[in-house]
Image 1 (cartoon, one colour):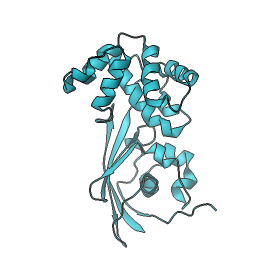
Image 2: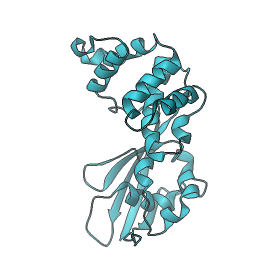
Image 3: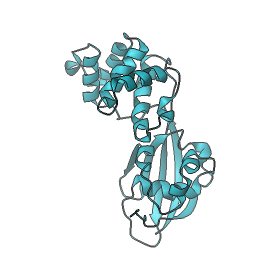
Image 4: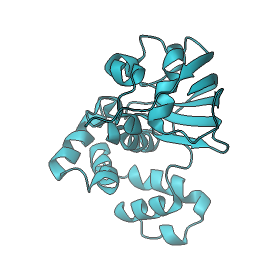
Length: 222
C-alpha cells in the first residue's frame, strides 16, 4: 500500500493534557491524606494535589503515585527503587519495559511540577502528520503501521531506527510500537496526532517532511 506522508509539525511539551482525570486527582488526594477532593471545585484539583504532594518527602510522594498507577504491575521493592531513581535520572526514558515508559513520564511530570524541579524535567513530542494512501482506500492505522510509515522521514540517528532497524524497515511484527506510541488519535484516518517521548522522536530526527512510504502486510511468525 503506497502512501503520501506529510509531517506538519512537532510540538515539544512538558505534560500531555487530559492524561490525569478528575477521578485520578480525587483518588490521589485521598492517598495524600486530603479526603475532601470529591467536594472540591474540579478546576482546583490539580493545584490541591500539588500542595498535598509537597507535604511529603519527594521519594515518598513518588512511591505513592507510582503505586497508584503501576501497583498492579510492580512490586513494592521495584516501586521504591524507581522512586529513588526518579530523583536523579529520567527513568521514563531509560526503563527497560518500554510499555511502562509513558506512565512513568506522566508520573515524573506530575512530581516535577509539585516539587518545582526536584525531579528531572522529561519532555514529550506531539507529532502532527497526515498519511494519504495513493493506491487504495483509507484505513485506520495502528501504532505499528504509523511508525513503519514514518521511517523514511527519520534520521538514521533516530533512537527507534537504531534500536529497531529491522522492525521499522521490514514487514515483520513490531510489538514494541504500542509502548513507544503513547497516544495515537485521528478524526478522519488521514490526519493523525502521535504522542511519544522526545527521546524516541524529536524535531532533530526529522530529515524529510514530505515523502512516500509503502506499508506492506506484516508477515506473522509461524
